[in-house]
Length: 335
Image (cartoon, rainbow, N blue to C red; front, side, top):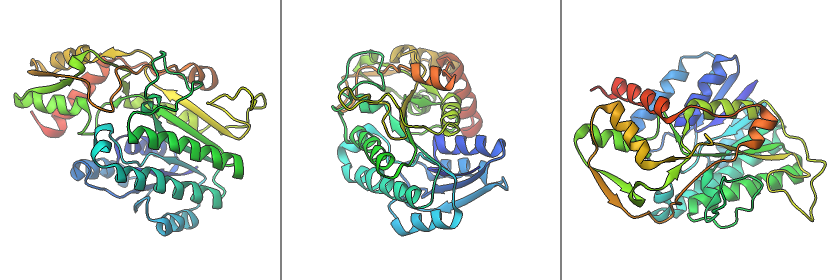
């Protein structure tokens, strides 16, 4: 297939692009290489895919309506994976318009590109953050998620609503993936594992929010990519049993689906830190702090639909995943 991947220099996008290329697909990679975090790391990720003859590199902003339209019209991708977004819960508190520009306006341009170019299937990144104030665990895609706690979460919920509208009006098959705390080699420097590793190796203290008591469904990058590929290969059909008087949030009478992709094994942050300390052979100096605005105490993915419909369940333990990250980090940065 010819697959358009946005955020192709990003953490998940670069890993997904590699997997698609390795299995023989053509990849049209779209990224703007913005400076939200280290551009050098993005370029190093991108270098892994540029060497493949099946990879086409485009430097574009999602907000560039005409540029995105030209990319679709010229390259005619059969399927699309939208991973480009302004990420980060805390960043959204001080920089809300960045999320409106990329996550809302930019996503609308992707939807329009799919609509006008007969794309077979749009898969897009949502987030576990959409569960917001929900406290019933594990989080289910069949539950209502109308109480986000950050603009980042609200923008991801909005993406799900926008996608459903296009599925309904234009019969565009769309699938949203709610990712749960992705980590691993080539990860984002603004994420906890990256920041903790850098600080511990430098002998600096780490900030541990909620006094380390909150739990996260940490999900290893390879598990995320496997889930994305399985979803990409299964184009959703309308749910014939869907009823408007008892609506199911995860499906529709339109060709629309939502899935959680999480490890289904929430881990307390302090345990996560202890595993990292063991892998580094050093003890962290910890600043114990309260829960940050916009954060939620716990995340825990119900992946029943992923298992029953796609035959897949993420299962990489944090012990294995963190060890692989530390090995990569020392190889990439030295020491």
